[in-house]
Length: 164
Image (cartoon, rainbow, N blue to C red; front, side, top):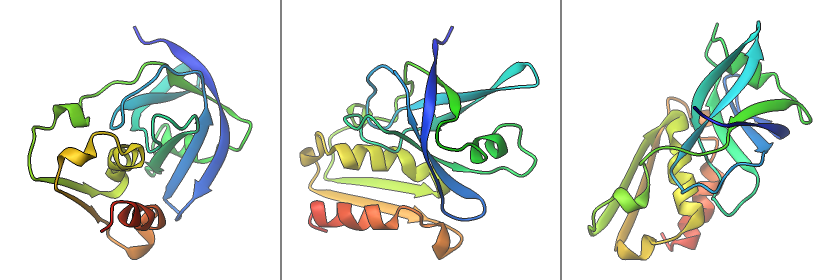
């Protein structure tokens, strides 16, 4: 059974009417770039939870998540309505195998994502650990509209960091 901890929202960044990022301070266990956790809220007497990938590097204590508001969704509209200082439940131990240790050696690391699935790649690239084993790093983020490229400035910073 998952151990839940209480986190405090420190920032809500609304990118579009549907896309937003949630930054939370919570006493979670160390995680590996590319992993996910679960966020939850008490709604009508029950904990409603969903899995979300970390966007932040594991060495950054600001836990960042990139979400889309699902119309008539049970949880995402409630998460979108949170304000700094509000509480949210977080599973303390991350999960998932979408991590560099699972990628075999190869010349080019292809990172392909649509929508909010860019999160794990941003976590991996911000940490920058063990990327030197790849000759080329290719990040492709597809979105329906240019306005949906919320993390484009960060991707441009990473492009400079990794020299193209």
